[in-house]
Length: 239
Image (cartoon, rainbow, N blue to C red; front, side, top):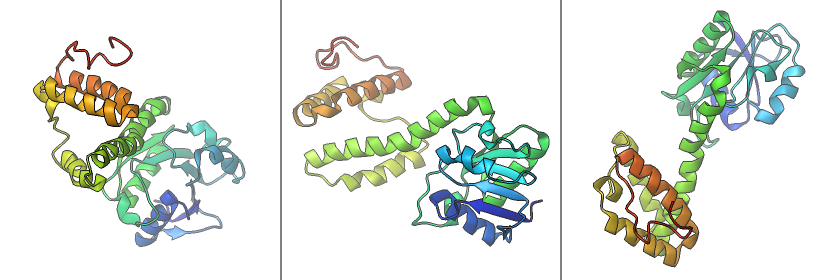
């Protein structure tokens, strides 16, 4: 469908993986007169870069949060957001099997967006421009906050004299098991939860509020209700 693509930001984390995959698939990477210009640049730079492109070719960005209006004045435009975390230490295999949000204003743009996703090895789904904030918030919770949780959990293992990296197979196991909820809250084992809180307050007090918020959210998923014990009330009173 598209024979030539120009990647703006080809040396970045997303751009390098995309460029390598397109080269694998025989798509010409062309700086002059491409049919599609794909912006793999930081969100804050999208509008400025788009304004510097001569209208005519398709123009798209790979941002999950940025609306299509950032691609003004281009009318032949769409967004394609690979729902994946990228690193420059790996190659195009990072794209394999990941989902991709495609945002388009016309049937033709949607067709081109789906084509690009499939060429890249992605699984496309349609995302309305107005729904970007909720979508991207979910993506941030799943990826960015997982890093935060790993750091918090690793801190507790370190306090116990255990290696934080021992958590990594556990995290992968939870994913492999389809995110099935296990553990003390799922069992209603509040004595264990209170022991958690006691040691957190003693050794890692900065994690108390985070633990309590997550305990409440986990109890809701499990259909449990936190008991009104002195420890579970938290330092700020009843929650």
